[in-house]
Image 1 (cartoon, helix red, strand yellow):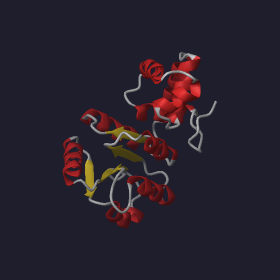
Image 2 (cartoon, helix red, strand yellow):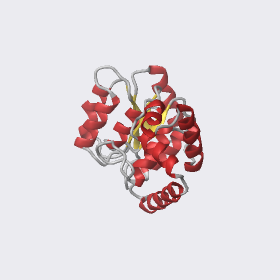
Image 3 (tube, helix red, strand yellow):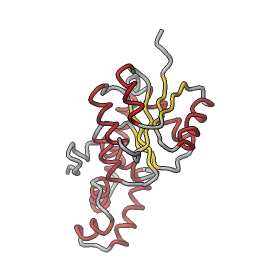
Length: 211
């Protein structure tokens, strides 16, 4: 019998960490909390399965640095990255490094639990992933050329003003295209768009958008 998967929560904010632990325990999930990436890395060699939830901005060892360590030692261990800063460049970097999801605070309980369940079932969900990718390509096909250009700028980490300058349009027009493509892609956040872009192959390994 497979051992019960454990969710490892790493966050230097005691209140946030304890809140996540309580949410997961209430949902019937086994959980262990760590107040720093350093404390977690000490037990990482003994971990073979489960899922990691880590904050991005932590002292000494950041969530991104922790993600690198995990992918070097146990590349199959899924990692969910959370942040309260809405930094799209961090989302791009985290997903390039292999994070299975990127959640921006504040996120609702159901969103987190869904991400955890998806992470734990990622190996068994190959068929679902293929269907999701096909759905993303269908949504991309419905975008106008300009909406696609704005999408590529966003997932590359460019600000609205930069995209506007590159395309020769106003920042306000970029905002309109951005709102339209968020609706067409059914994305709740920029991190959603980044994840979709990674799955669809829009974003290459260098973090630059592919044509």
